[in-house]
Length: 214
Image (cartoon, rainbow, N blue to C red):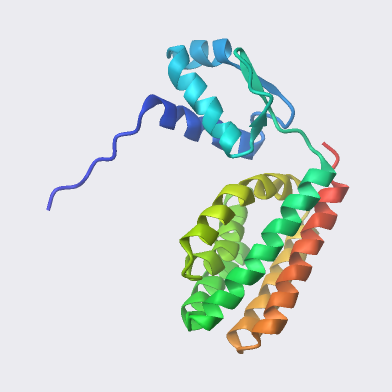
């Protein structure tokens, strides 16, 4: 059986690089990215650069797109609060849908897997990767592709903000403890409680975002 090679376009490669740099903080919130600088840095024409910036704009990671470039989103608590509220609402819907579909055993297995990964994470990347997949588990098994795609798009912005908001070991321990409580309630079949705990978890995340001062 032959291996299938996936060829990426220049704009797709640029997009992955810039998205990762924004998410990691290498490109700070509020900073400007210009077409010329990107063309010189990557030795490419203006077309893949414009395509990349437009894709970042669709993701909500940049704003004020002009002929010369764009600006990475800045910290705005009101915007963050609305995003957080929206993600919390659809997450609770996804949780309920997994239970209705009888996918709770499979979801529980994934939740415990990523909770363990969070607990033993040795660095930021491993911790936040596990955190992302923990929450994504409900969407992966909810049976609704539109809900899954909506989460994937809008959670990126919340994830960017919460990644900078969780700064201490105490923040992490609290989040892990809350995840554990969600798993306990969900795995025991108490889905209403699990949904309530998930909602409280997002409220707690918003309190951390509020304290963030870039």
